[in-house]
Image (cartoon, rainbow, N blue to C red):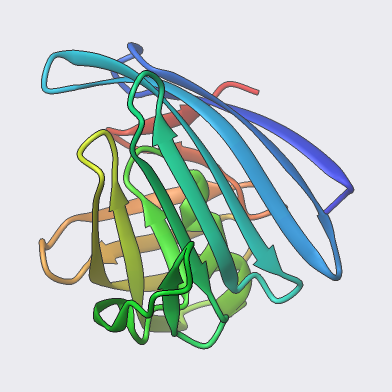
Length: 185
């Protein structure tokens, strides 16, 4: 990965768009994005920032919705222990190393890069699942299977049964996520 990558995704329906800047190197990665979307017929705009260490383990998630004072601020230690921004332990998130923000395909990059799966390999993980604009934070068991290294993965949410085969680029960023997102930059 270079020092700076800019990516944009459009929702599959064509209604929403997001702009992401990814900065980093061997010591860590920081992604910042703005998302313009719609949820149940209600338009909204959100911002998020995710910081990872050099091994792509999530260390911090900050997120909010424009016009709403509430904020999500989660701090991870990279080994599955989480606190809120004030340092209060969040035991209910224990065991999750990655974060998954439902409004962006970027968070698929985190386990794809961290796990480094070879062809035909799969891994079951637990993620911190963040939903905006609902400000809901839960965990979700998931499975990633490498179908073609550096090009194609199968994503599965083990609780909901949701499955998609996603195409990625050489940096692990989603190019197509059928029914949800397509990369436009």
